[in-house]
Length: 298
Image 1 (cartoon, rainbow, N blue to C red):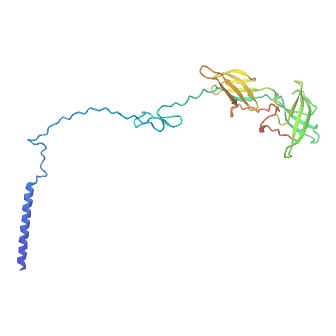
Image 2: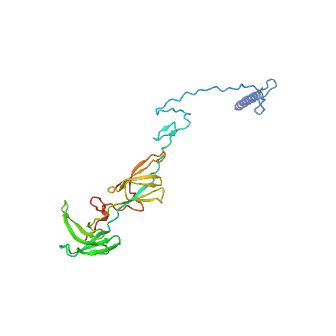
């Protein structure tokens, strides 16, 4: 019985397989071959070129650029250049920095005052209670020699006589002691009595203003009076005033052609190869500056 069923199932399977093969062959004959070439041009409908009409450009009107918050007009394509003004803001117009004024042409190198030919350098006190027993150390500026002299003595080489010497004892507001030593000499060359104060360098009357120039290293002029006119590397000048208290001068540079006149107050330049000599107070004739203190031996 089982063998009959097996044969029946086998027969049915063969029939189904044969039917599937028949259908596959039928469908394959209908579908075009994938490997067959495609006919891009048939005899009845050939491809023909067609004429394309050319387009004419049309006029375009760009809208006017609107005004911005900065006050000038700006758009994608305008202005063709963007500038920055003197304040660092964008600008539609170019800006040129101002042309610097021409140099003044001169500077103050120093103001010189000629020291008096006799100066006090120190003293040797033999008796602290008796100032008459003192030996002063004097400096002959002309001969660059040290001279020792006592009150009443004279030095013929230096042409002076020490008339007197005294020390004034003082106390400041904090009751700190101090002293002022004075020597009175007779200048045998001029016949005048001159008072020399310890710690104060004495100067002759008069001065010398030394002017130089950055534009011309060879320029060097010395003036002793004000007003004084002179020629500089950048034009004509006039020395108007000299201030010994401020160690400065006032100079006018005269106008030349289109260049206007200019007045400047010049101070001695720091770091100049020729340093400014010490300036004294014209009222007391005292040397100003802590570097010139008198190392007394009292």
